[in-house]
Length: 334
Ligand SMILES: NC(=O)c1ccc[n+]([C@@H]2O[C@H](COP(=O)([O-])OP(=O)(O)OC[C@H]3O[C@@H](n4cnc5c(N)ncnc54)[C@H](OP(=O)(O)O)[C@@H]3O)[C@@H](O)[C@H]2O)c1
Ligand SMILES: *[C@@H]1O[C@H](CO)[C@@H](O)[C@H](O)[C@H]1NC(C)=O
Ligand SMILES: *[C@@H]1O[C@H](CO)[C@@H](O)[C@H](O)[C@H]1NC(C)=O
Ligand SMILES: *[C@@H]1O[C@H](CO)[C@@H](O)[C@H](O)[C@H]1NC(C)=O
Image (cartoon, rainbow, N blue to C red; front, side, top):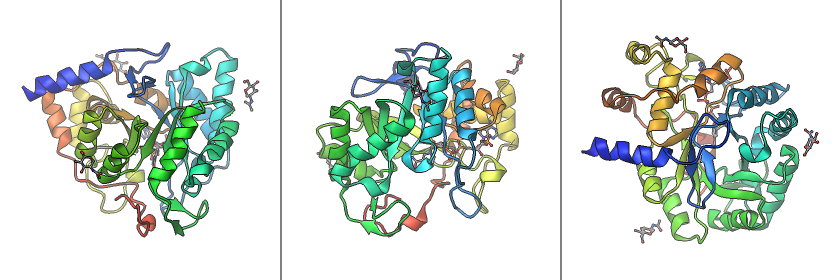
């Protein structure tokens, strides 16, 4: 019975508008806008010492161009990624070439922690828009619930995220962001925001992968019509990104390989499909053409209940993005 209800909910959520030329179905957000249910990540990530990889070339621009050619219509960036200009150039180039129109691409960017004062939010977004070479973003997310004194500072400021949210609401009212939402809020923070806002968050972006499947946040979001976007969708799947002691599975796990063979798919595709079937919008990142194409190719098969139950067993609440260096902040979420 529960299975049938879940399947019904799944179809109710995915059937609906399709953005032209987009391979992923769209999701109707609680503010009436539509979001493609599959996106493209553009963060270059941390190196082995948990230091952000610096942006030194145009690999992000090239990757976004490949992604748009492959059929992605949803691009995820952030002020702190230092690549909004590259996303902007890629989208502008593909508009000029006639591959896409601006209103067919869903662009997300994020507010960094040093811009949490209510009256800093709109100017911060305007700066992002200039780099993105566009007059609006489709989605503006608060990157973290806590605030810092400056961009790379670990000195925390007590600004309440409810105050920051008022700035986000202003950005929406001005038409600079079509939709607004948050990242990395825990359940209590999300409930508090919900209880204390007239304009509700349309999206929650949180780490979601086999090791951290977010059952409580997904349930709250489902019940409150908040779309869940899943970042770092591969978790510790690839040995290159698995820290010492990271829980299984890896990409060569025999059980996962067997599941993938059964559907004539790859293990990364099975993982992305599983997240998609949970109702999550995955935003995998790759700068490699074959992988960019591989990752999007998950809309022509469906996992059976037996395989879904197995994939569920990997949940252990383990985070890749654990940011313990932020743990002194009052509003630290984890
Ligand atoms: N809101 C937040 O706080 C937050 C935090 C983290 C991430 N994010 C967003 O979420 C996006 C995705 O997360 P992520 O970049 O951390 O991790 P991810 O997408 O789970 O993994 C990216 C890594 O997987 C590799 N990869 C991708 N597809 C592959 C495939 N099919 N086979 C083998 N390897 C593959 C990539 O390699 P190559 O690139 O070398 O191909 C890269 O090393 C980010 O880019 C960012 O936009 C948001
Ligand atoms: C920005 O967009 C305009 C069209 O709106 C285009 O003419 C211009 O080349 C773009 N700039 C960059 C740097 O891509
Ligand atoms: C939010 O409101 C609900 C319903 O009134 C209540 O049960 C919950 O405790 C509130 N949570 C917070 C954090 O304000
Ligand atoms: C399996 O997948 C590959 C790659 O997508 C495809 O070329 C091949 O035709 C598929 N085989 C079957 C039996 O569907």
